[in-house]
Length: 327
Length: 258
Image (cartoon, rainbow over all chains, first blue to last red; front, side):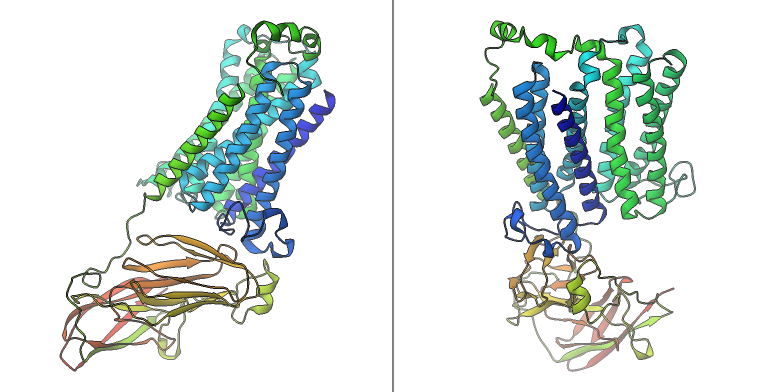
């Protein structure tokens, strides 16, 4: 089980690398540098010569190669989990990750073949973040700390923390979707100054692009407020819960860095490295908030020690899961 | 369970594909549509012996041309003969090149598409010509003369978008446009600095200026016209022109920069 945890950690790192590669594709405007899919310029993608990975092809084809690798890793992930994991819901999450990566691949192909329609590209960006968050969650669920530790904190004892912790990933994901909408509708510089908007607190005129951009800024304010409130609450009420304070403080730092990167993205005129870092840090922020939320609500998952249940699993499955086919 | 999961995945994929197909019909509105020039009356359009000629000049000092960094493709670094941006091509006396001049209004009837094939070449990792015109239905031959791969990505508002790869030197393809549209942009997503514009009209009365800024629209029937001049950075200007039978009307445009 420990090796599965290490493997999942590797999968999570690979998924983050894939998000960086995807961010580079859009930041460099290379989304259509390879006009066909799944082939690359008529060649089977794995046979495409490295020497021809030039210009925008380097980013787009590189993204496809990393995506294929993540796809293969995900097949391994879901099968490995199915074989060794005694918790049914974790096995289901493994298959969900596989389904997500397949759909993500299809979305990537469709968005190329239909010239980057915004709804598909935004869905592709959003699902990428969900997939990464899912793999990070699986990494958490298979970690020794999660599996062996009994819930040290009961969310029902602190409703405020429970709600803050649940709100954070939801609001952050909404913020990511707004960012993806901004990115894929060309509204990244709809408001060209920062922190003001055209020299005013509120934009003096409104277009769809300005509205999306401004909403993303308001969203950043909401995310920052929630992150600070969560960290402050933990500091004052649960200072000793290191498994909660650590991700909360990390979340706060990430959010502040992310706000800085957002401002820098605007002020630099969407400089490629800054713009891409903004996407990547957004993903890590979402994953961190999810880890915190899961740890706060650790008691919902009961005794998550898979090994202790393993012995009784055949009996449990025989009673009520006849339709659940285990590969 | 396995079948149910499979069906869920297939259904989601179908929904996604359907959504993508629908989004293709969400075509943005056309930026410029020549009104008279785009008329599709049944009668054959007249030709004549009149001419509208003139020149385009640039007033002011344009931004200096920038050197394009082609390092992302070593082949381009070797093959490039021109690494300067082409936004402002200014000749002696202030003539402005790469301006598309055309009759925007005043023509009636339909004109058969020219049988002459216009070539858009990718050479030295640049498009040649940078600005040009064709008639609706006229063939554009797009050629890759470079020993590297290009994609040809047309992003029209009215015509059908296309994005085709030409990975091998010497490859060629032909395209036509079905709708009047000024201008249809071309770009190469592999080499982000490569772009070109084609003006698609229903008649043959158009020209692209060279560095001297001169243009000549000949064989026009006598009449009153709106003549337009389009530049990729400076937008479009129009002027009303009246030309008599067999006469030449002079018209000049001045774009201002800075």
